Length: 490
Image 1 (spheres, rainbow, N blue to C red):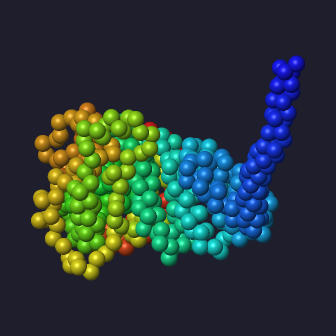
Image 2: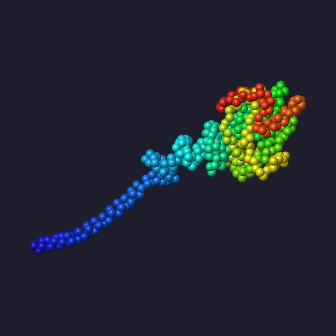
């Protein structure tokens, strides 16, 4: 009985305690929950109002952050959303340009090709904005990054040349002009090197027609090419050989004039070349006047030699890195001088380049050199050749490694970059031609005393041959459509 009463008392006391303490505990817990739930909604409402103020700006800034961290796909999604959703946004032009930049920075052939299309679309839609010049520059840079070596496909190099030329002609006041000029010089170095390799191959195989067609284009179109002096020397030797094989006295004079133009250009426009003394000797043996060196060309070659000394590459690492890299080596490219901004001319046909009365190369005088006021008009090259011949020799072999040459003739040194000397009887006949044909040239000079003067004046006034001016019937029809290279043996 007492035990039952005790249990009932305990239960009542416990119930009273719970009845008073339970609401207090639940109230405290409820207050905490309410305080937490009140903070979160306020933060969400604040973010939503900030986003709804300028959503196009938020999309653009978010895309810029993604591009900075190489999240190009996410960035393009945000930019495309901005372009499609807000066509009147002030960030529309920036978004289109950012899409092109994302493809360019991602790299790869497909992405760079897409970048070219995006940059061109930007120029079409926004041609009057300041960023249009940047877009044109980036089109050339995309082709430049896809450019291959000189002995491979040259389509990307030709496209890069066209785009950089268009940039320099459309935006001559742009601050990117110095960079575009240097990239254009690099591209023209690669294009000229590819043509010169083919010409030297045909010269070695004694296919002089095919070689002359390539050499005419290299010497006339790419005057800043690092081996232009070698190309001119080889072309002059081919003309001397054509003179030897001619039986008509007028033809002999015509080929002698063209050869003299090539040797004159070496002495005048490449005075520090190792081939300048040989060119002077050949002119003297032919009875032609030796021109003075051009002061602008002399300053350009000195600046180039100084640059090569300061940026000389590691010879030990150059060959293995060249085998691994797919991009061309533009170390030997010129860093001074105005690049050629003229469009490509018609290609010289190999079937007519050495025909009777054919015209020689038309030298690009405007791209020859940069004149400086500090240089004197007349420069004595005798003291320059001996001091700088070794430096120019190392410069001319940076891109193309010439094969091992045979023993040279004891009388006349062999032409530059020509491996076929002793093994090629036709070439050896060319080399000894000036010394052997000195007496043969004398009667022709007596019958037409104005011939040497006409040759020298024509070489200084643009390189047009004198024979074609005297005889209109012998004007060359060797210009064919671009891309036509007919290779016919000699």
